[in-house]
Image 1: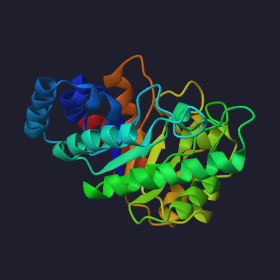
Image 2: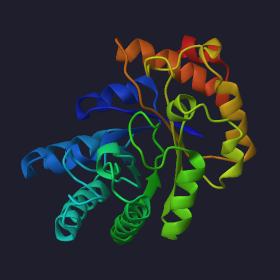
Image 3: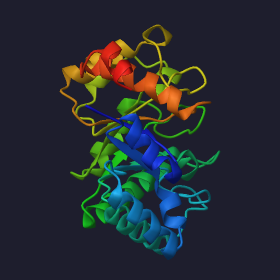
Length: 266
């Protein structure tokens, strides 16, 4: 397993110094850059020892993939082609599909119809991503954020309904805890292609074992031989201080080295 962090562009070099293996940028923020701004970011990425391999926040606010206000297909396609081409140029490999607003089902809208639209649009996303050699990770979100795809099993069902090799499932520790899911669900849903982690309380950086049931989660990841990325998706009052503590904790949970040694090294 490798440790990453969800950050804005300006923290790229700081993340490398702190010892992260990769970073996770916002996909819609990459899209919004002017050509000159994108070229400048690409130049920084080329010089940096770690890369923005993963991307969250696939769609900007206002995009809808289900319901009567569904965004037109041509607009979705145009957006995805530009976004994915830029992500590929930045050496990206995976894009997270969370986006609670984009997939929320309107009150009174038929669940079966909404699910069919979500499935079709997820398949569209996956097919376009495949043109750029990218993977798509479906992210189940807690029911306080969206009313579609709240649990790991629901995410696995959507993955299977889409039926594309480059569309897989993400397990987010924070959302699992918010939905009070049994950590053994990790064992039941098959292969994972990405992981997010944050404390349930305040969605802060993980720091200490006693705060949450991290051990159960990581032990189950080991049981399924998960060897992908684990991105911290959280807030912190001090990026540097919180990152050092989180990296030390995650390294210990992954079995990547002695926690005390790592803290001393930093």
